Every structure is written in C-alpha cells, then in structure tokens.
Image (cartoon, rainbow, N blue to C red; front, side, top):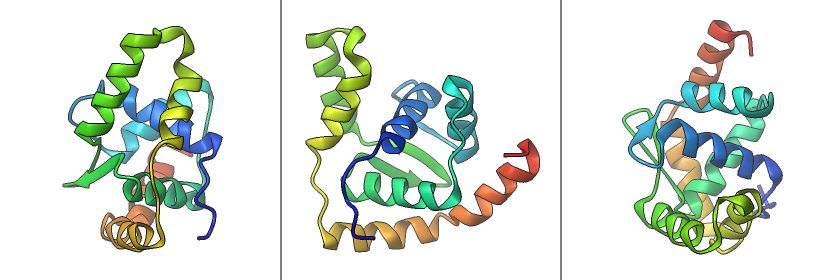
Length: 134
C-alpha cells in the first residue's frame, strides 16, 4: 500500500472509534463498525478497513490489544487539548487536521501490517457481516 495519505474513511472510522470507546479503553471491531453505521450509514469494505487500521496503527493513533481497538493515550491527549482550545463545533475538520499531523513511514506501515494480520481482521469482519448483514 503506497497511499499513506489520510482519507475521509480514516476520519469516519476514527469518529466511530471515539464514540464507541468514549475516548477511553478499547472496543471490539464490531462495536466500531456498528457505531460508524449508526452515525451516518457508513459501511466499510474489508479492504478499506485493512488500509485504515494499517495507517492508524502505523501513525501510533490506534493500538490493538486482546481483540480490542483503542486510541493511543498520546492521540487522545492531543484530541482533548485541541478540542478544548477550538470547541466541538469544528470537530470534523479537527480530526482530519490531527490525522494529518501524524507521521507514517514505510517501516511503520510494515510493522502495522504484521499487527493487523495478527488481529485476524478478515475473520472478525466476516463474523460482523454474518451477524449484522453488513
């Protein structure tokens, strides 16, 4: 994957993760996908999810542990600081500008791919589709 630019789908996933976790702790992929659907009807493809997770892990925005997705404490702190400064009304642009400040390299993407593979994304996505008709 050579496209390390941030996309609208990255921001949508991040919004869903923020809501699913309340900015604290982790949430299973299923909860994040349900939240994305509830927000605005967004349904991610498996390929989109793979790329989103790889970029967010590579940028150290997202951590994956025990089958749960969580925002890194450093990213949450950045988000809270800027939200307090700018207010919630600019939230949509705020997330994208925060993402654009994160660094992704070929090395961090390679590491992230390994982490995402261990997460067994395909199996979790298929379980979500079977249960919720994604």
